[in-house]
Length: 479
Ligand SMILES: *[C@@H]1O[C@H](CO)[C@@H](O)[C@H](O)[C@H]1NC(C)=O
Ligand SMILES: *[C@@H]1O[C@H](CO)[C@@H](O)[C@H](O)[C@H]1NC(C)=O
Ligand SMILES: *[C@@H]1O[C@H](CO)[C@@H](O)[C@H](O)[C@H]1NC(C)=O
Ligand SMILES: *[C@@H]1O[C@H](CO)[C@@H](O)[C@H](O)[C@H]1NC(C)=O
Image (cartoon, rainbow, N blue to C red):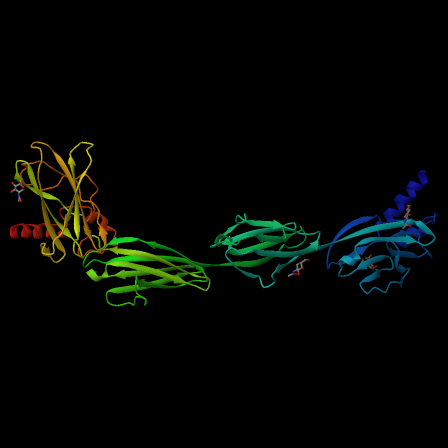
């Protein structure tokens, strides 16, 4: 027992020193001994692997290399398989070049007549991931509402795990948009009904912890008809003012956009007063601006932003309103039980009628409606229409409130501010402000200028206001 141990130790030591022959000679017991130990190797495809089979005291016995279960590769130095990728090195070790999955398995080296004297190496071939996009063009085009399928065929050993990311409008996200279903172990994405938010680049990444990950990109284009947003939807037109509208169109493919005067066939063309501008922000947004300068009465009305692409068309209208501006009520005493209300309406089209509402102040009384038709020979100062109404049958000493609306070809305007009065009142100079004041537009003011809002909210200092006032006084003197 002691002797055997010493012999093995000695052999191992001599082997370490590379003195194999000396070792063999020096040892009296000449039965062969397997020095190589079994191994379990993970080998990446394409690599070279060396399987050792060092046997002490092999003498005239031969090594046999087998690929289990039964394929004999080498018997001694004779290549039985004639596999050009398998070589015997130094008469003992097996070398396999450019390994592929077919070299997967167990390799045993055994000594003839001593089959129990063997060493087994197990090779596990690993293959880095590869992916292929399906469709292989990497592009899918689908109409909004239709179904779409995107797939990534990944291969590798072990089978790679696929993860997806989605990039939309330059934002990459690991969470897929709602309505996207992953099937077949994540290799396929199914969209039952494609929507705008599904568009973008889908990147699949295959990873199996072997070598580099692999990725493929499929760009999904969702085609849809133009969707329009106009701003503002409504502008009060005033002679000489500048108005500007923006029409924002989203569509795929991008749309052709035109501004059309409602009721006309041909699109507006740019001129010294009409400015048109468009800007495409890929992939889907187009903005179209319409700017009208030095506004005239005939510019009033509605305008349509019309957009069209291969999928469909859409239209949104904006309006330069021709409604009369809210009226300012004034008044004068006209008797102990009567009061004369007066006003001047500003309108691009003649006033057809007025509606006056009167009730006792701070009461829940029903309003008394008075329709005031306008006779053809009514006083007209181009844009300005002056009128008066003698309210009779009032209770002396009682406060009343009145509101007036004007009706022209464009419709009823917004109500005037509420005016408080009582029979026998002296002439009023300023009405009591009890409702939101609608600003007048400055004749030469660009309303797209943000400072406009500040200026427009001041009431009596506006030049237009003063103009109305002066014309009103002229009108009065003509009475
Ligand atoms: C084969 O033998 C040579 C020379 O003896 C040595 O340099 C080499 O490392 C050996 N190769 C293997 C695989 O044992
Ligand atoms: C290798 O040796 C063991 C005993 O050590 C034996 O059970 C086994 O069958 C042998 N393998 C082959 C392939 O001969
Ligand atoms: C992906 O795999 C599926 C099923 O294995 C096959 O039908 C399809 O042709 C493959 N596509 C590509 C692009 O390799
Ligand atoms: C208003 O009506 C009252 C009462 O009928 C009358 O006395 C007054 O003269 C009228 N005023 C005007 C300006 O018509």
